[in-house]
Amino acid sequence: MNFAMKLHYQLLATESAALPVVLIHGLFGNLDNLGVLARDLNQQHSVIKVDLRNHGLSPRSAVMTYPEMAQDLLALLDELQLEKAIVIGHSMGGKAAMALTAIAPQRVEKLIVIDVAPVDYRTRRHDEIFAALTAVSAAGITQRQQAAELMRGYLQEEGVIQFLLKSFHQGEWRFNLPVLIDQYENVTGWQEVPAWPHPTLFIRGGLSPYVQDSYREDIARQFPQARAHVVAGTGHWVHAEKPEAVLRAIHRFLDEA
Image (cartoon, rainbow, N blue to C red; front, side, top):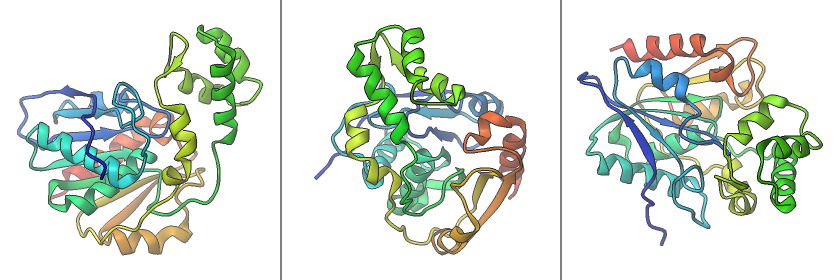
């Protein structure tokens, strides 16, 4: 049996009586990734930014499945004595948030999922990234500039390189690269959750392949109150590309009774 891990987090407290918001990053990320959302939402809500297991400063584990990640999140809610929270997750973090509704349905008041669907993705989208990260580790590089130069031989998108380098510190990746490679099918996969009939918002990038019309039945079956908001002209990093549009959609959703 796998036990919940004590996640590293940052609490941005406020005196507001509004429900707190939990923000959950995606693959290769850390608790700073949704900072633009955190700063805005913190005007009305206490915000908890989380490092998922095997990421950031949270503990390492050989297991990287959504049921385990959900147990970690539930343990954090217990630690903070939060009976209910609004949960927002991007990509892998969105799946972790959806998995939380399966084990603690009464602890989530509203759910916002950014550019991911509750489906088993059978497409490997990160092999070039894994190759670049592994090359940096194998070369024993300690400086970000040298790491970036090496990674450009594998990756064309400078934005992706700079995003990954946010987790590079003194020659080490702050995510557990060997485990992410080993557990990749669990990260891209999905075990269907029981229907969670509460307010759910899926925000998708108009140019992103992660939430397609063909997934509509999968979403409706597991999240029957789900609605979708498409941000035109954006890819998978919709909240980074058009944060104002994403925040407008979030506020509209949260302001509804």
